[in-house]
Amino acid sequence: MLPYASLTFLSIATTATAACSRSTLQSATTALLAAQTAGNLSALPLSPNTSYIENDAALALSSSILTKSVPIDLSRSLHDTTLCATFTEIISATGSHPYVIMTRMLFTADGAAISRIENIVADKGDWLFNAQASLSKAKDEVWVDIPEGKRDARDVIQAAGDKYLDSWSDGKVSVPYGSPCARLEGGSYTTNCKMPEFPKEFKDAGGAKNRRYVVDEEVGAVSIFNDFPFLDPKKPNGTSSTNFVRVEGGKIRYIHEVTICTQNNCGR
Image 1 (cartoon, helix red, strand yellow):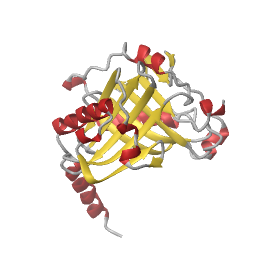
Image 2 (tube, rainbow, N blue to C red):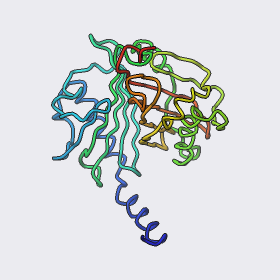
Image 3 (cartoon, rainbow, N blue to C red):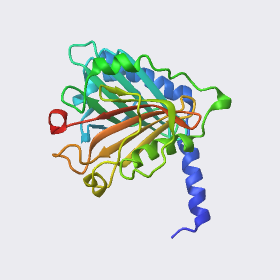
């Protein structure tokens, strides 16, 4: 086993290697929006071995949602220069086939090429899905960049999101909810962000697990891709889900949740 000092050095080195420029990542999310609008992969800076996951299934990019032209009514993106990753929320409510799409992209060390794309693609039949309601509420929210002197550290932002997810398994977890705080779950909107502790089956299945993060200090937000157990009887150990959390002054201001179902509204 490597000594602690060596492990620490490797951790620092990995982080340093992963760091890439914000402008490069912003160019990539701009390209993503262009590709999704056109249904054409050519706009994306793909690597020769880009892997693709859609709703937990490994697919060829040629079979992905990215090859379908999707009109974009609203989008928001996060750019994580520490992990060299991006997150983009897309709401398409006015096209012939409404979608809400949450996209996480990972990049090569310099940010020049996409190494992996993870997509959560929600449409009719997914948990509380209503793209028009999602658009109506989300477009009125204020997600402007946070002034430099008022930004939270990335660990504070990520911890706020983690505590929210942790509270589903343990109602005693102290979650830093703001006042006000609004939550958009599928197309359902509420100004009460506090969630009750979920049934025992949720905790017994490991709670919200396999968490994958994108953190952006300038936007003050984190996206957490995770496996959500118990909700869908056909996937008791976890279905594809994501939580997009805005944090202001250490407190949660907005939460957007999207969860995929294998049957209409997860059979509920």
